Length: 430
Image 1 (cartoon, rainbow, N blue to C red):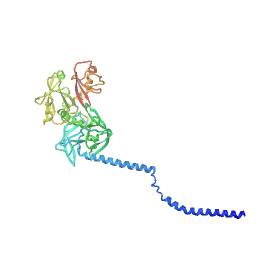
Image 2: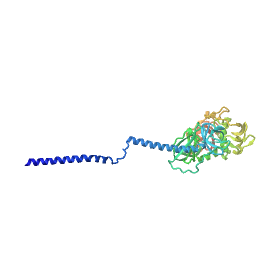
Image 3: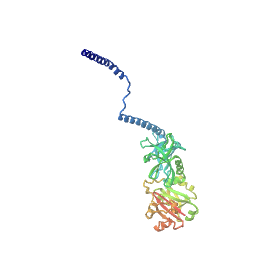
Image 4: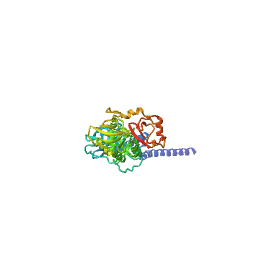
């Protein structure tokens, strides 16, 4: 009895298993179809792909930024000229005034300029004193457009600014940088405000400008001794005024610096009136003609000289020669200056038109090794390293005599003639 019952039970289990297998087989394709319709999204990019996308994004940003600054440079490029002497120039006003960088030699009387639109113009030097970083020139007629100086710029540290200059290929070039601030600085004895940016300034930028993002001029790029600086627009205005003054024009043309005699100098030189020669620049016409610091000019031609204004004929008169009446060590002497500009070479050496007194006097000079703090010499601006060419209108007799004067062991008035680079100047110790 038990064996037939076991067979029926096994048969039922087999039938149930077969039914489960059939149903499972029938359901499986539907489940796969249902699973295949579930959205899974695009595959995630690889690390290399993400880096490539970042680079493309940065490249696009750089291209847009470059195009932005290029447009600013294009807009202001017409406000600059290229000077054939090797520098850019800023058109300061549309009447024809151009400001450029000084040179390491005497500035030429005229300079040819490419003023754009395939046009050239001859500019005449109005003022380029060797002690100033800027030179001022003027065209014979109006120019196309002029810079617009920013009167009161209120930049934040880190804002973008743009240096723009001209190239010898009659194109413009530019370099964006970050504004870092304004500081007071000096070139020699000349003090001005300098705008500092993150871009190094080089000789190829000389005479160019620093502009803000609205195209307003912030500063001019000028030579300052052995470096290049960005002089603020307000300081440029003051420099222009000084360069084109009578004193600036005398320095430009002859390398001759003058000053009105004050009471102590009148007593020391034993003169009642005249104009004191305060400085002479080596290689310029005054130096080669034999003018020295400490000379007192008492006449120009046949006219008496009582004030600096009486020297105007030296720069306003068109003549072959100009005669100066001078008192030197109490004796009257006459010196002839050339009526046309004598060009000095880059080395600051005489051109051959005359002999440089300063260079000859240097053979008997004494180099100042130290200046004591609080002395008359320090107050007068004497520095260690200066050459002392004359002491009381004679070559220095001994180092002991020099030390007595410089250390104030002698309280008597003394007149020193010193040389620092190409500048030779006199200073009164009272």
